[in-house]
Length: 124
Image (cartoon, rainbow, N blue to C red; front, side, top):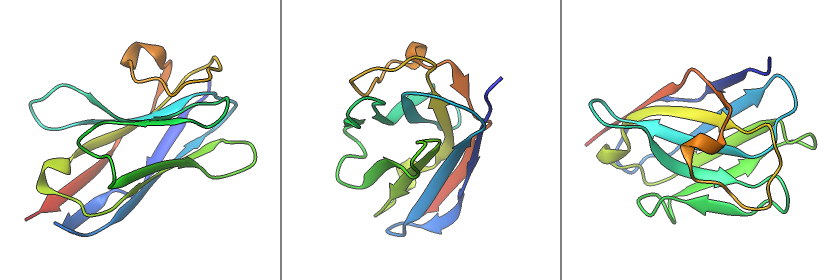
């Protein structure tokens, strides 16, 4: 069973930057970041396609967040977050699919494996 492990969360001030990482223990294909704020449903943040590396972002993070895969085996996922806002406060989850796709998928049902999450807290 492939496992995902997130790291890089923390407490920052509005306007600061953070970089989240997610390491997969085995082969995965499409990957994405989701987040869940207290009392709210899990929401899509960003995704990257296995084939072609196309990306997709939630409107709320476009221009501020960048998703990328960091190694030749594409087993490490990153999320560079700049100009953080208080509303970015949430638990951030890494997700991975076991089948390849040529588009960056946004539907939570497309992902088979989830990490435990890492907390990001942004103070105003």
